[in-house]
Image (cartoon, rainbow, N blue to C red):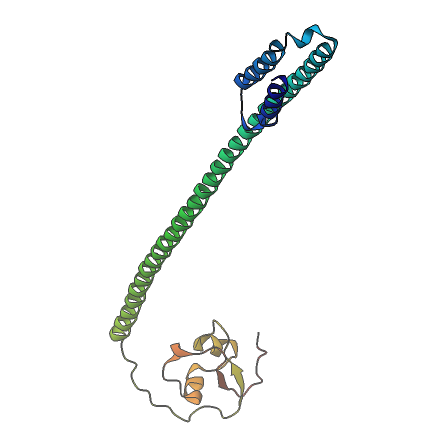
Length: 222
């Protein structure tokens, strides 16, 4: 019977990793105590004393083994809790990344909308400026046309050949007037007008070449 109880106790210790808690530890110790208490007859003989001593040693070893297994179970529980916490943190990290992606997408949509609105506003401003410039240009054209309409027409002139046939060429410069050219070159305004057949003295052009009729030597141009 003692051997059967000891065997049962060993089986329980070998299968202890399938159970958890001090409840099983106490049950194992109780079984071992029952095995010892069930052998009073054998304890009276020398062989019985040896068996009891061996059984006690087995009990001590099993007790130590049970304690080690209990420590191992507690370690496994702590590791399991750590894994659960890590899984929860990972899920929270994934949620944070998803929220960040949503925020970035929303920001992109906002930027695109602002860009489109800015383009529309810029086009509206340009359109307003173009309309204003068009009105100003049209007003200037109208004023120019009105000035030309009210400007007295230049009466046609009769040119004569009564001017000196000798002279020199003169290039009209910026700021020149026909009267000023005649005075500067000691020439007659009438002779210059007739020689060049100038109908409107106010329409001289820079770079235009005029013949200056003059019997005297030409004065140097400035």
